[in-house]
Image (cartoon, rainbow, N blue to C red; front, side):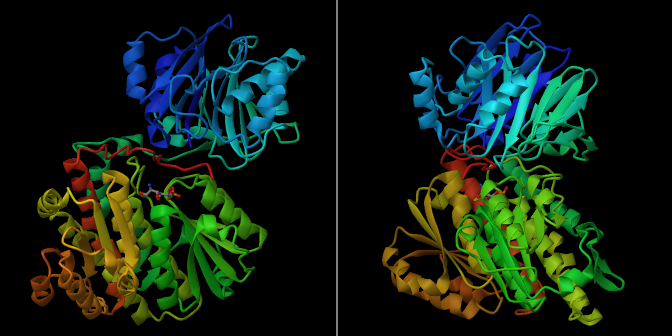
Length: 620
Ligand code: M6R
């Protein structure tokens, strides 16, 4: 899940590459590097361990000269994040420079073969084998594209590869193999760009072409040529993408994570707008592109995703059971793929992915496709791979999410899944107008109530200060608050590096209770959704063992508050047990996002780019 950029044009390539990489650091920030080629084929490389800022400081505004180049930010897979292992990588003679996203699964075997032929390796990376494979093909007389295609034929795994060679000045060749993340080609005036992800291109162009599995492209300042996996030259039609790059700016917020937490009410409105209709009450998912008859034929729903997106699917499961009356299950996408799932054309498979590029999710989608299921994806990124695999898409419309820790796309995905469940219920003829009105009313209130929860940021910061020295945290919830407990724990782990567990509260007495002592803060999500009384018992059990309880309680629930050490108040959303309860996760997860954020700040952590993580995980 490294970030990749390339440029062939008439302007100085260096600053353009760096600007593109700045938009891609969420894909990895272990090291950064660029290679720039001039009109005679001379190549200058600047690279090193650490974040892009370090490379920019090293360069001091003086880039290698040239109008063709490639650049990379790395998330280490093979080889430590040091200077030698930073991309670009070169062959023995420095004639070939390569950047790469993916894992060359048979690299050891290839490395031995190449070393036996006399190739000398300068890094521990799998990527370097590509430079040597391409060198060998060039020496054998092939051109750059032919050499790249031949190299692809030798490697296993999924990849995005970008390469330049001294003997072809002005040319960048690029290939996509499998699902190791996207490859986008962008068109400007007398210049063509390449990137692993759209945000890197949006300040330059919105006219783009996406490569699919096995395709190769050659870009020059005068345009791009494409090859099919079989090696035929093919036409590809450019499309215009709609994103507003301004939305990616941090604005007045100190961190993207805070900005993205605070903009959730607006994002929620964007997800709902034009889809939840009130006169008459109905859901319009026109952009889904799946006829109601097909949805009527569905007898079962399977949802999957990874990380935060998987937590959204757990809420989605309840929506499909309770609203659409369908048996539903939620799974981790990487487990789904290998579990031998039994499904067919009457199964609706729903994937959730902020990026739409997560390889675990994409592979699970391919498996579902192979089994003939109808597929919908809930996605935040226009044109992402998942949207091209699924039969239909529900976009969350949140704008780019930059912080590595997902926040706004969770609440928006929950809302999108709720709308989808209502839509399927309507297609199945089981949602009367009255019922639809009852379902949609709480959804309409959710954005403003979420806004009122976020106003408690100051109180949550104080709480964070009190608890930021804790070494462990337990998060407990029941029913729809169980995925919220898991998400609260995930957020805390990701950004503050505190060990945290999210448990279904009923499970506590079956083991985790052994962990509780006076040093163990327990976050108990005990809002009035039908499980409040049972949560009160959990709180009593924790207090009986001297644990510290931070309760999320419904406003006015003084009895519950009196049992806890600290309380975060959550507003009511409809009647307890009514449809509003289904949407309560939107309100309860927000304080947990803020708690993780502020604890991380008190601990001095890098909240937007936590260690070891990358925003989009395109390796298995
Ligand atoms: O782009 P996706 O939604 O498919 O990403 C899935 C996970 O990688 C992602 O949610 C990850 O767990 C985040 N870092 C959570 O904050």
